[in-house]
Length: 218
Image (cartoon, rainbow, N blue to C red; front, side):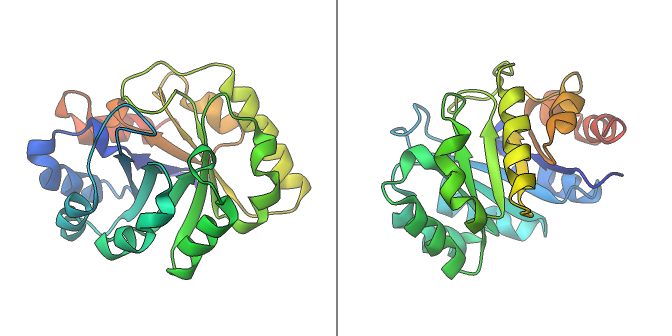
């Protein structure tokens, strides 16, 4: 297995079997679990919040990679920490005071990421890049699972990797949206090292087989 981190998105899981499916991922030695929190405002959909995260925390020891697709996430940082988050990613587009929100996450003793929608330029996070552990490049417009990868995002990954390297920083690059076995190497070659996959992992409930297929090519 490579040093690439797979972070399966439970948005694509069978919610009626979520605890069971998380245990399967743990048996497959998957290090992260990606949890998409949607508020129906920043994005059209509503997914799940603190109660669900707290309920499933006991099902796995994996890193809870919590992606907040919500307006003004600063209101809830401690709540998500208390629910079991290990890493919280906030959107640059959703934060009135991005620096302060990043600091709030760090004050809770958690790792912090900042996310960019497909049309948001890399330049928008230049001045906070040295504050974060990870940058999430959305490779679809957020809000729904099962979308097709936006090809122009590959160039954004390359641009971000170049910016990180030029500053001598140790910052992970996560990609989320439309990632599957046919394009996963494309995003890795561009510089991504944390790969969110939803449908590609949970499709037809064949979790072990799907994870093995992904791991065999990264």
